[in-house]
Length: 205
Image (cartoon, rainbow, N blue to C red; front, side, top):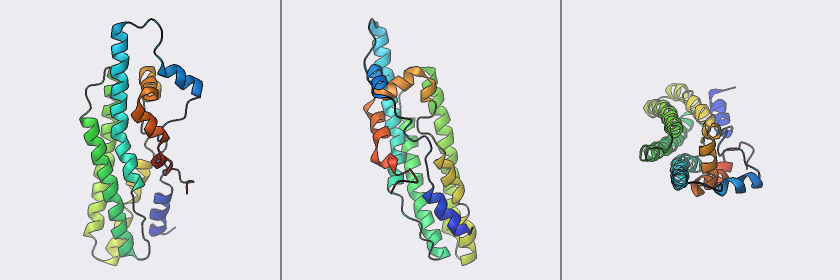
């Protein structure tokens, strides 16, 4: 496989594994959407706060999904074209990561410690991917010869494959309060039902 083919296949196979999360059965979602009987006022406030926080989290990571829906196609016609369009693709990806990180940074403190832990892990991962994408883009932009362009294109695949393994709501399923909150929050429903999310499916047209 040539380097150019590897880049094209990396883009075509961009799966964003776990994007959204598995769909729940209607009955389970309906049960999650209604508060259980006998909740105290404090429990209701905590539930509402957790739902609002989960909604803010989903709104933040939705920016990454939107950026991928606007990604340009890599043009493999020549090494220079492939280098230029790969740089443009990474620029869109970096912009989405920046907006996601900004949204996560502006989130209020989570009502439960697991939420803060999940956010911190997501921020760390997104920052790492962004740094590697920025490095690859700089290498592409600095290439002035055909040989340099070919070498730079090889750096594109790593951040693409890494972002393709990201699960946007990673950790939510392991925390019942957050899982239920994500089923109640409209922003999370939009994320899991998004048409843009479907574009990450390599089988989608």
